[in-house]
Image (cartoon, rainbow, N blue to C red; front, side, top):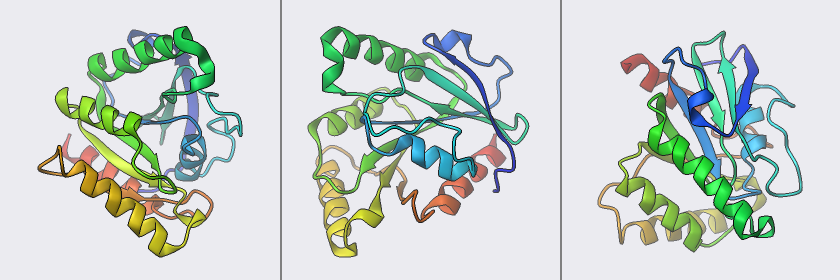
Amino acid sequence: MIIKDAQFLISNTDYRKGPSDGKPEYAFIGRSNVGKSSLINMLTNHKGLAMTSSKPGKTQLINHFTINKGEWYLVDLPGYGYAQRGKEGRENIRKIIESYILNRSQLTSLFLLLDSRHEPQKIDLEFINWLGENGIPFAIVFTKIDKLGKQKVKGNVDNYLSRLQEDWEEFPPVFMTSSEHKLGKEELLDYIDQINKTL
């Protein structure tokens, strides 16, 4: 699949205020500063579609983008676990995220972004298990694979997967990406395309 057209549609904190035409939605989420905005811009061939920032915690709303003249929606969700937000701020973001994921019937698949440079993080593992407990269809997307040597990336990813094996019998799909080098773009878009064809 090629994304020829991507446009910002609407931002809000209430999942019920999103588009109501029933088209499939693919949402992207991850810890703050995982490279989510860069990945969205890379997938859509649109440098400034999602706001990138060196300061974590930039996305605080549910952002809907219409793809290829309304064929489907790409949804940019707030990052979770940003410590400097304070307890109340983190709680607000958690409510926004959870209400969208649990109640938005148009959500077709969630892409959970993990930074390939890091060891398995408790907050990510908890989130993955929460998705599993709630039966949410999702895929894991490792980001920034260009920032480390191949062996180190492979070691980190293998660590993650063996840690997940403790709780999961079957893994969700796993993708390896680099926004800078456009790695993983075709695989991700083909995956979305395959799902769309079955709907």
